[in-house]
Length: 353
Image (spheres, rainbow, N blue to C red):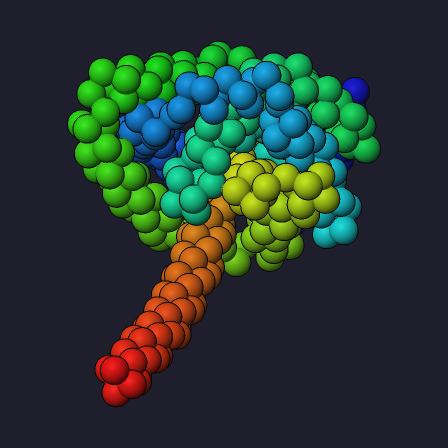
């Protein structure tokens, strides 16, 4: 395959100065290292704490009757690549940027979704199953989806799927969860404390990553408006269509929230690694901020979903409390009326005697 000549475009690496290119690559390397370390620590901690909530029977029921998993995988490898392709075509992105968006669209779900699912009162067992299954299936589905959707661009490079990174992700997912399940089985009281601490620390880490990401990539926000708009819309549309598909397949509300979060939350670290392995330094310089921007926006969307759900939950709880209060008042009035009737009846009996 041949490389498309992009020397006439402003985003072509040949039009960048050496100073700009060096600065971009250095920034990319520093950001990648920081986020890799933080995300790895967060992944292990969060998955260990969430493993303390896993119900073995419920987990096995998802495996025996994997309807929720099937719907989730359909969203992951059916909807997300299609949404990525339509966004790329709609905004007429240059080839390298278009392929970067498609790589992220074909990536498996990220572990951040498990923590967001917990705070949204979703099905954590289903969330962990979906993340694990999508990561395993990614070894075959990522090359297939990328082959189908990148045929519009004549690329010289072969896109390299980082199987080693996928293996590390699975290891960091399965091992902490297994330890969490063991702790929950042996020490159920202590596991509740671990869950609370882990969930709070996980949220703090998410906030730190979101704020740090926003500060570190501030300079690149307005360098390419079409790509920035695509980055903002992509996770949002993924959440919306994931929820709608789950709703159309008659999934319970708990699963609908879970599938929605899992659909929009992609494995940003895997996409970043694949870009670095597949393209030259000059080409990576054009898109090195894209995965970071996506991670920033998917966290903002996750916080928004949690805020909306928690607000709705509190309003419903308040409404139920008011309803219960009204019911108690009615029952008290009935009891008072009944007591007065009994008293009046006894008085009449005494008068007749």
